[in-house]
Structures are given as structure tokens and as C-alpha cells.
Image 1 (cartoon, one colour):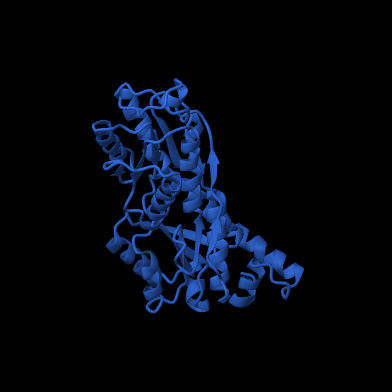
Image 2 (spheres, helix red, strand yellow):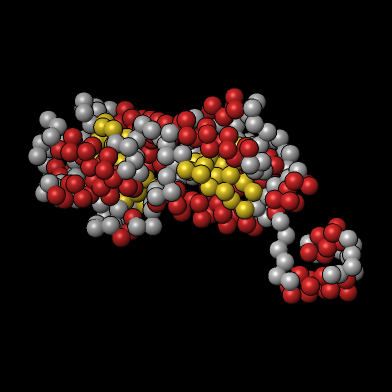
Length: 332
């Protein structure tokens, strides 16, 4: 219709300066009248390049992951990438299959959050050409993480300063690296203050509200109930608030609760949740920027750690003995 070659049409649609303004306007007008859209698949076959990045998630329903996806998509769009999502459901085999599928689709690169493989991607790099960036796996060479260790220390130190000596931790062993750092931070603060950890005060959840409910029930029947609970994430903490309330345990009068993430609903809990803030926007943006650098061939990319920040609200207060002017051990 325009009387020019396909390459000229392609350049005009991409506002190439080599095409005259008059000819570009003609081609753009025809494209609009014909409702023409370029074939990205055909372009990728010709150029052997793709502007799509793959994103492997744990669960789309996870509130933390959902907000992380938004920041990744926004950052990717600003750099001219589209995003293709696959869920792994925290299964290592499904995660490997997802990465293989993204490799077959010839995505430009891959971001993985909630990985069950972690450092295993060092070996996978020999098999796949695309660069891979992990979120919250600081031991991997190309990763962007929150400072889980320092965040956990802030949370537990806050509880100790409030007079708590009976502090439990609800873990999530399926989140390998993040859980290990948060558990290490918990232990280090108690060790520094010479506070013993009672058997049964470190209980396993699974990062979900259902798993947290079972974990809190274990703590409620322990020989000495904790006066404070540090939770792996906010979903765990929110379920803990509900379970404690149903058992007649007042928060924070009888038991303080601290989460980790600072989800958007944390300030709207009853009472508002004290938690450690992960800067999700920065995590997503930096993951995309790091991946873009790798796609562009920059090899000197180093892992990055973003600071975590304690946000004190209303689910933490003085230990019961401190609040009542007593110092004896609390067994309620």
C-alpha cells in the first residue's frame, strides 16, 4: 500500500531517523487505517532477540509476591520488556521445568523469587544461555535481597528491650535462605543477651496462614508459653493474631507479635501489626535493572542487599511481668 519495502515500514513504525518525515507519516497513517500491528514473534525470529523476560513465582496468591510482580512489570516496561509469568508453587522440580520452558521460549533473561534451588542456578548457567537473577538469595552471584539478618535482629532486639525473655520464632523452612537468615538473627540477639531458647519455642510454619495457625497452637500448649512471637512473614503474624485472639490471649498485653514484610494490610490489622519492612518496589526495580545489565553483556554485576526497617505499631508492648512491675517468669 505504501509502495516501499518491508524494512522501510519496520523502520518507520520504530521512528527510525533514516526514514523521511513525509514517508513515516504516510506509513503510520496507513498502519492506523489498516489496524496493522507488528508480529513480535516474526520480529524475534528475524533478529534472534526477544524483549520478553521470564518471571518464576512461588504463588501468585502470595500478597508479598503480588506487589513484587507489580514493581517488576513497571520496571520492565520502562526498559522496553514484557513479562511472562510462571508459578512454581514452591516445588523445585516445577521451578526447573519453568526455567526450561522460559529457555525454550528464548526469553532475554529470567527472574526467580521464592526459589527452591538457590545456588543451583550456578550449575544451570552451563545449560542455559539466559542470565538469571534471584530475589532474596544473597549467596547467588546475581541476586537482589533484603537484609533478612539485620531485619530479624531489629525485631528481636525490640522485643528484648520491651522486657521479653520468652520469645518464640515461627519459621518457614521452605524459604531456605531467608528463613536461615531470620532464624540466625533471632538466635544471635538472644545469645547476646544470654537468653535461653526453650525447647519447642522454634516451631515450623510454611509461610501461609494455615501453617501459622497450627504453629501457634503448638506454642499455646507448650510447658512455658512465650510472651512474644517473632514470625517469618506477615501472613504468619496475621494468622497468629487471630489464633491468639480465639484462645483468649490478648495482644500485646499477654503476648507481643512481630511480622516480616510490611504488607499493605499490616497497618489495618487489629491491632496494627509491628513488622520488618522489605522495600518491595526497590527489590523489583533492582532485579529488573540487574537483569538488563546482564542481558546487555555487563559481567561485573555484584549481588546487592537492601536495608530492612523495623516498623513499630501496636502488636508489641512490654512483657507482662515488666508491665506489672514484676520480674518473675510468666507461665500463663
